[in-house]
Amino acid sequence: MHSAPRNIAIFGSTGSIGRNALEVVEAAQDRFRVAALSAHSRLDELVEQARRWQPDWIIATDPVAAARFAPPSDLAGQWLVGPEPLVEIAAHATIDTVVAAIVGSAGLPSTLAAIEAGKRIALANKETMVVAGELAVRRAAETGAEILPVDSEHSAIFQALRAGSVAEVKRILLTASGGPFRTWTTEQMEQATLDQALAHPNWSMGAKITIDSATMMNKALEVIEARWLFGIDAERIEVLVHPQSIVHSLVEYVDGNVLAQLGAPDMKIPIQYALTFPERAAGPTLPLDLCRIGSLTFEAPDYDRFPALRLGSEVARRGGTTGVVLNAANEIAVERFQRHEIRFTQIAQACRTILDAHDYEPQPTLETLMRLDSWAREETRKWTSV
Ligand code: NAD
Ligand code: MG
Image 1: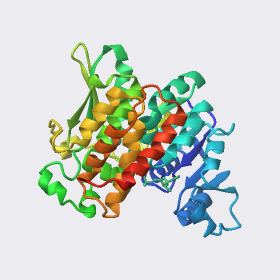
Image 2: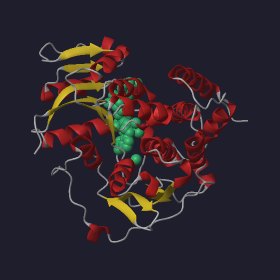
Image 3: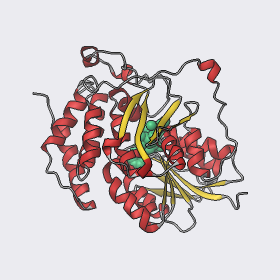
Image 4: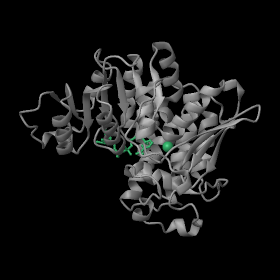
């Protein structure tokens, strides 16, 4: 049986993962208490959530949005402004678990603070692992922090890895839906519009990860995430296209046994598992009806049509400063695509150019990572195709 409710901080509570996390808590209120919530710009929604959940802290991370917003006087919790309180609250003695659901490398400082403080982290913010995975995992081993994956593929791998040891793993097969352009030619993708890139066939997610799914950069980031999270070299991580998004990933052991995890495409399942692990609890998700789904299909990924995949394998292999540069270039390239400044296929092209142009270091400090993050952003803002 579980004991007293765990105090959880949900950073990025107004996002797709944040809202799903609150639905999980709603269904398991004996297990969890919401102690902190944060949002960047949707402050009306943050206030609504705070009224419902009565957290001790409510963090409005964007100072510009917060300056234009008057928080109501009847909120029980403390209203905090700017990104700095995230770091402080992540490490606060009363917090047990941090749900890292901020998008982009903006989620890095609070996730690292939670790791330093030895917390449980339900990690949705894969960018942390891409930018500083090696450092984060090393520090977590030293502080006793537990990093539990929320990404559905990594939750699947995490569960399948409980059947054997990392040394016994032959391959990890990371599944990918293939996104909205799975069957498109490169020429068609060159003309892809923002609306088309935002129309994911299986998952309802935030804009950035949805565009990343269309370029398959999301899978590239996930290969890198898996490399650090599970300590498995890049050569043993493969991508497998599975359009139905029911098999969330597989682990093949040296003896030929292959373990897969299946579930409805609903993020509440991996979020809840990260929160309740090692226990399992009844949850708010509908059961998986395989008879209705009928068939599950698999395809090899196409590295020529989706060049982002090649970047992912390369960065997972080289490590060092490559992750921070790829992530920063991609964040800016995606923003520029959203502003119609560059074409869809230029997202991966820009990332390739910036990655090749950077001064590689195999063992960077956090300071070097931060400097390269700024550098890669600046370069990608200026980038034009030749
Ligand atoms: P989203 O855009 O829906 O939500 C992002 C949240 O972060 C919002 O609450 C927003 O207020 C906050 N935020 C945005 N910019 C910020 C900043 N600069 N500083 C602080 N907070 C900021 O995104 P999402 O789809 O929920 O994804 C969140 C993270 O989870 C991403 O790293 C994504 O890759 C990962 N993830 C998401 C899904 C999914 O199904 N949505 C699945 C796997 C992994
Ligand atoms: Mg995923």
